[in-house]
Image (cartoon, rainbow, N blue to C red; front, side):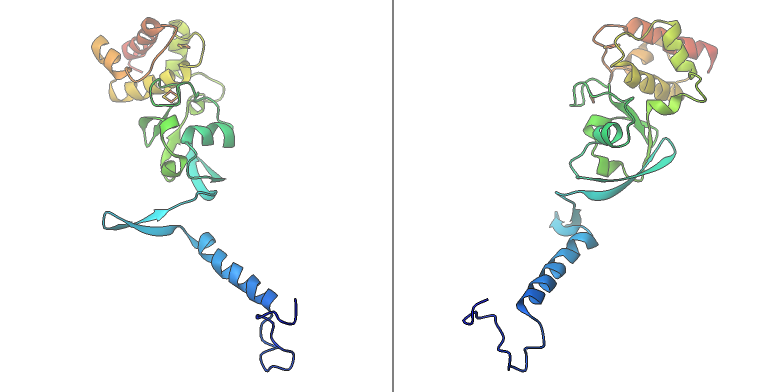
Length: 210
Ligand code: FES
Ligand code: FES
C-alpha cells in the first residue's frame, strides 16, 4: 500500500483503529455472500414472486423408494441424471433423453413420468418410485415374472421402463381389454419389437387378478 493510497487511513487519524481496507474488503465479500446461501433470489414473473435457483449447486432432498436422499445439484440436472449419477439407481435408462421412448419411466406420486424430462429440483417432496423397488427380498414382482414367462424382454434398455409402466397401468386397469393395454402402454417404445410379449405379460397378470 502506497502512502498516496486514497483508502489508507493516517496512523494519527482517530479512525485508524476502526477498519482496515483489508478488513473492509473481507466484510464486504461476506455481506455479498450471505444472501446467496440464505435462500433463492426472488423475481417478479406474471405478477407473482417466484424463486430463482442456481446456476450453481443447491441443496435438494428426495424420497425415492421410501428412503430419504440428499444431494447438492445444479437446478438444470434432470431426475434421471440424479437417480443414475448421484444415487446409483441405474434401473431407469437414458435412451432418447427427450421424452419419446419411455426407457426412463419412473413413478412420481404414483403417476408415470419420463425421468429424463423432469428436473430433479421439481421432484423434491414427491414420492419417486423406480424399478429397483419392484424386487422384494430378491423375489420378482408378478409383472416381472410375467415378462420372463412371456419372453417380453430382449436388449433390456426398454424393459425397466416398460415394467414400471405395466405395473402402474395394472393398478389403474386391473382387468384391461387388449385395446386398453395397447393404449395404456403407448408411451413406451421397444425397438426390438417385443410388444406382443409385453401385452401377453400384462394379460397374464390380469387373468390371475394380481
Ligand atoms: S430416455 Fe426418457 S423418454 Fe427416452
Ligand atoms: S427390449 Fe430393448 S428395445 Fe425392447
